[in-house]
Length: 311
Image (cartoon, rainbow, N blue to C red; front, side, top):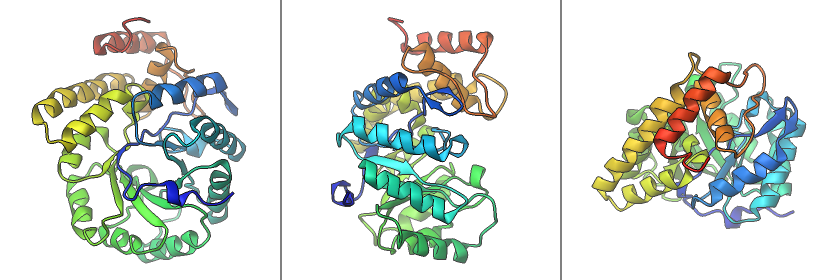
């Protein structure tokens, strides 16, 4: 199959949810839940779909399951929005393999965080990107996630990477707005390079400052909310931004804050989707789903948010 790079808007704009991976067991997709989740997200008017990211538990999934997920998602989406596929791996060859599977399935682009075991230097990272893009069959988005990878794509590295043919954008999940503004300044000579905010709590601020959109985990639950916030920020309708931002923060401080571990974001998201009847809440090892007490808290929060009126 030929590359789908001609389908991808440059720059890619809007809300591109990092989709949860619905599971029944360790290595078994919740296929019915996956189908419902995709339709639920797309019905919210999103501008793309990102699978096999952090929210999708990609590092915990087998290569076989990652390929199955990619095929099923692309088959169901059928080009309605661009599908971006995570190819992050500690092994160069495996990243290329997943990218080729993504191309064959009909995805529009791939997404890569730095290899997260050995502490590569910035020069080595840039060389790695040059070597990798030469073998990738699809356009590449960088993924800055220093809290998990322990590596940062430093601003000058991103600027240099933007000049490499095939690298078309970046998702920044650092939560560092100074860093984000530095990127914006350095990327002015690359107007086709898409700069997306990963921290949904900062979506409005970033878009008001000129970002192209956001990769918002909460859009699994309430896609229309994040699309509306993005549109309001683009139009600089500050009153609407303020109202919608409050609801985004309510999701962040309730759904993501049940439980005492850093995994509470992912557990809360999956539990909420389960309570809403969209997909199962099984998590890949080493995590486990919320027990009854936490689940009851999530249900209460969903009702307060108006996301379970008819459930």
